[in-house]
Length: 82
Image 1 (tube, rainbow, N blue to C red):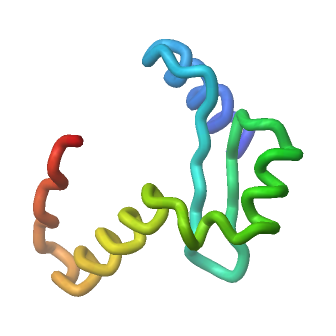
Image 2: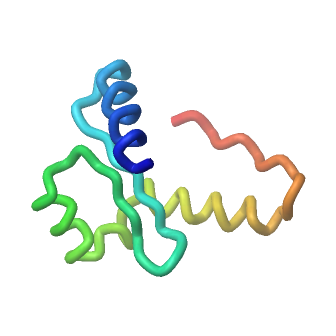
């Protein structure tokens, strides 16, 4: 499943004009990262705890907490376009 996700993410990344992509799941016991970034970079990212500082990750966590508090079946508010 992860291999298929990586292939799809790579195609989409190219079509959108980006060089790299990353998917980070922080639920569960261990973070799961599917990324086209070099392993040396992603290892350093986690070793230095950047996932705690990364503004994209922080926003995703905050929005997840907000939608979880609304309860199932309720539509989350639309995020502002940046």
